[in-house]
Length: 144
Image (cartoon, rainbow, N blue to C red; front, side, top):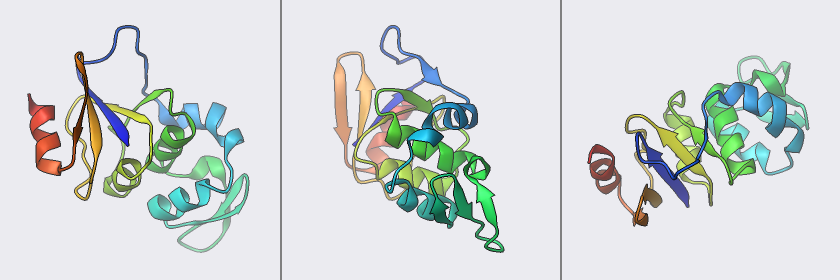
């Protein structure tokens, strides 16, 4: 289950990774394994060719993994670094769907960013994590 943090409601000392492209290229890319293929296919509609290459969805050409979309890199950052909090403000709906389907990880945004088909997410509150099972409920938490 994804844990969601919102503006002005972060644990003391928590740091948010705001530049997902750089974090991915510097740290996450070298840790990718077979699990990455599903996210890359869901978000960028592309196929993994090897650890550092994927096939372009447009013409099938071989591209370096650093050419993935920011949304895809963000989803992979969250999946491979569950102990960090990642800003999702640059993610599109396809990336949000993949992110909200992950088994774990933490996300942050200054404004509501929720996948329409989300089925469960934990929302951080200084008193603890409250679990929401519905888009509308999570949206109400985010607006409060």
